[in-house]
Length: 62
Image 1 (cartoon, one colour):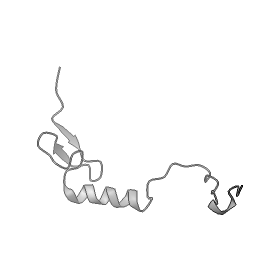
Image 2 (cartoon, rainbow, N blue to C red; image 1 turned 90 degrees about the horizontal axis):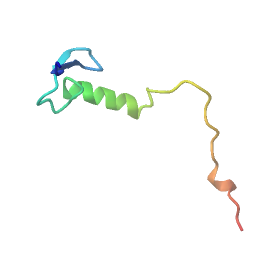
Image 3 (cartoon, rainbow, N blue to C red; image 1 turned 60 degrees about the horizontal axis):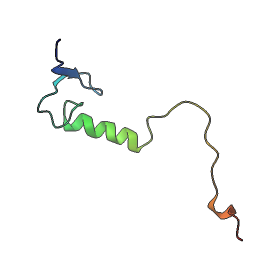
């Protein structure tokens, strides 16, 4: 059986080592931070209808 030692960075597609890479699966801190920024700005989305918004002011006041 062959062990995988390199993978392609999900952002830039550059070949990168798995072993000893603190940024894996990314090749560098730069690619890791770009991906994090995309998540933070809601750049990754699942297609579909928006979920209904819940208004906290309409709860039962018993």
